[in-house]
Length: 397
Image (tube, rainbow, N blue to C red; front, side):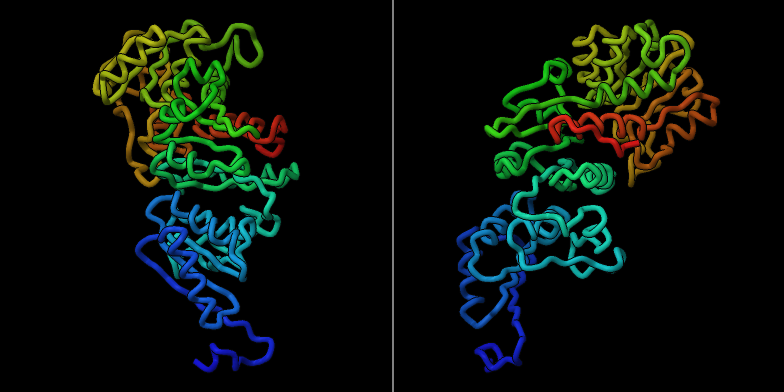
């Protein structure tokens, strides 16, 4: 106790810490805790809590930014990752990174390499804008690597984070500062995002799904959809032949495309294909959702099980817009292998892994395949331009 009360070695700073492994207390409780820690003689206050929801991190940020003494504020778990990356923005004294991803001392810790090379943490400050991917799950996404490299290349003062969310509306309401300026939306929030935005790009409104949200300086949220451009252009290039690239007539015109999935990605692909003149069939595990989407775009609806025998004509195109086959459930596939020979081209929106079971089996059947990586890169280019106000993502390719 004498050490804490002041009899410390010269040039020594004392960190006194508190760990709550169950939850993150209220702002008032956190502020009182900081005061108690400071009262025992701490030079630097450290408070670590646990996040049950990503919105819990906001309470730590509020206490940190108003703290009058050096403070380390960390929120543990994957939902609390941004507390570690954004520590410099909110006045944190330091943050923690691990040397080996296989040896974590607390849940949700990034590696030192990620902090330095992916998130560029040395350049994060009070004026840094916050971008990110809101999804559940989110850790499999390559978006943070892609967007942060582009941000660094063009010198745009922002950082892009993986944001494991549970409720999109709650997230957007909690992180309402203009500095939280743009978000990508993925499963399961693309349809929910429509209701969360104040304004919508006409195409996004027609599709009924949003994958990009931009917060304007006046605080209003504007929704866009870059999925349909990314997916359709990738499929068109995969088809090739007359009408591809910049031709007026799309290679999709007149073709029959089977879209598997009626969620956000499925809506975008179905809408885009219809706009290009394709005849669209929607297959979904929940038949009612397939019917709803098919009716909206003037197509046909099928049950997922129907794909095993569905072959009204040759030369069809298959587009998987579900999460089947995505890491870690890499054995998933929306259609039996024997039915893949009915198609000329198979596209999979899943890009992690790059070669899904669906694509591997399609190739084994001699079918041309288009990887979800193509869609991922192209939709990300559109998002990057929205996030930065028109700067092209020159490093994407």
